[in-house]
Image 1 (cartoon, rainbow, N blue to C red):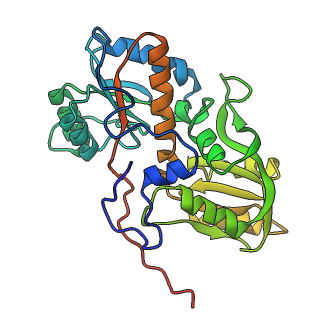
Image 2: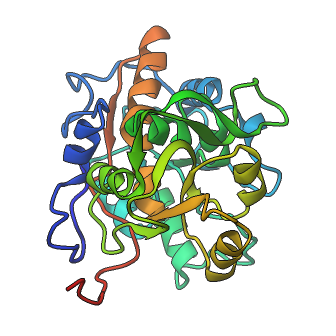
Image 3: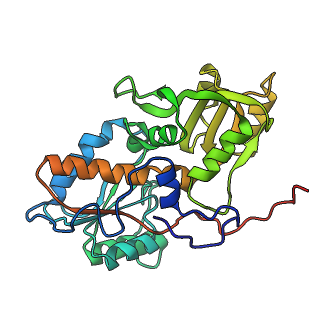
Amino acid sequence: MSEQTGPAPAENEKSPDQRAEAAGESIPEAEGTHDGAASGGVTLADVLLAVEELWPESLAEEWDAVGLVTGRPSQPVRRILFCVDPVLEVIDEAAAWEADLIVAHHPLLLRGVTSVAANTPKGRAVHRLIESGIALVSVHTNGDSAVGGVSDVLADAIGLDAVGPLTKAANGLPEEGIGRVGDLPEITSLGDLAGRLFGILPAVAGGVRVSGDRDGLVRRVALCGGAGDSLFDAVRAAEADVYVTADLRHHPASEARASSSDGRPYLIDVSHFASEWLWLPAAAAALDNVLKDQGHSLDIRVSTINTDPWDFILTPGEG
């Protein structure tokens, strides 16, 4: 349920909700996940307990900044909006819908700031949140690491079997950690796997970049939603045929190619936003289920804003 804010490749016209449906995801309806009648007395503290049950803060990486950013635990919550990036446009969308809480994957204040004055981008976001009475919670690397997290959803979308963590969590269950590795049900070509990802992910300007023999055969797949070029040692240790992640920089990608005798692991570089967007419908549904189990009924939806930062791309013709 993401609409394009900028041009995307002409051959990639499916919206994110169509792509997630093709991947088998359950997507909240545009007007909420249920009838819209929120129960009385649900507080932010109640929702935070459910968030902690699903995505414990203990799973977050040491450098990360997760949890409550704005909002009073005692404030009532009726409507919750999920997003990848808590940018001003998304906050405006939440305010127009009269949301009480935004659950964002990316932190608003990951790095230290000395001011939240309204003449700075971060400050404008904080002021808009507080003035609109909207709480903000970040579920970042704890959402990556947890069972059913970002990489699990991506692994499910491409149909991996026997999935396990690429790097195990220091404070989690054996099946928790950053990244995932598993096997395709059948051997396929690198080109076909890349095409499958292209068809599943939301339409963004950058598309899908591939390093390797288009006809090369792959079965064992390592992946990491979001930026994952720090995990190459774990990818090689897992003996993956291909590594799917985002934000691959020139030197790590070049070194990965140079260190391989047979071209493996091949590399598939996808959009950071797109690789993490797939998690949002699943996360919204999971939170909805936990809240219902606790006797709460709230409106929960996924943001319609495409926050991928790129608007268009120029590529050489294949002919």
